[in-house]
Image (cartoon, rainbow, N blue to C red; front, side):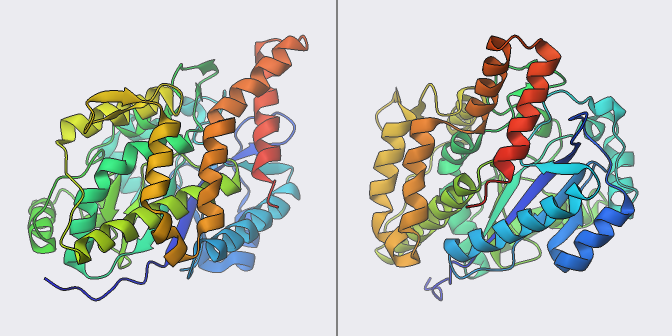
Length: 377
């Protein structure tokens, strides 16, 4: 089947936690703050499930550089408005010490329904993520690319980790967020589908049974968006460093472009069983970029920086075609200096070495997150 070439336009969604600048704990923004954000940003800002969260989304962008610029403007606006209320956003997937049991969910119909349906599972949902949308053409092409791109999802997670702390202790994981998220239904790696029609037949079973309203309540690590003609990657932690976010978006778009290019040459990326990809998903969740992922072709664990270098070489012509060579090159910087999870632990260790106790060291982690979230270039 011949498809019209996708545009590969990009959109980025980020979720932030809102903290009190003095106590460093999570805070519920006053309505005046959200009203000011809405006035400044329109529909590019939205409530999230928890009242202490906020979501921003860029408009569709022709390339990653444009998406990064939009994202910087969104972060800057939220930071400036929050500051007037003694608050600050942090781009981290968990808060270092605030308790989920002390948080309330947003009083909106959609969230009230979810809260009633999922009970304790969703009450723990004090986590934030980054979603990257790439316009991927016709429906059947989106399904075909989703089937193949699932292999790379652990790589994207490993590069984005920002949730090592939970409820005041170091979990030992680089992305504890995924442990919380996986308690939700309809999450994890997607099924494989032969066509968009087959995918919709499965969705319709759930809709017709009254289990979900529509496909927007299928929360896989990657999915065909039900709102836009995009393939939406959802596995990533939110990146504290904005250049990390742009780099991962660039790599994702380039991988999709590469898979489409292979298709034009009657080639495909080899698909591996979900049980195998799940092993890498767990390794990325546990170790991030530190202990390697399995190269299933070689049948052995390979350091992430080696896998990434191979991947960057594979998509070099695709990054050039998409005009994101500068942004994607930053992936090597992530491998060299670590993710937000590393820097959070470094901030904690530095505070301890200066004589701070456990609580004060966690405050230092929050201070670091406030500062790095605001480093916009």
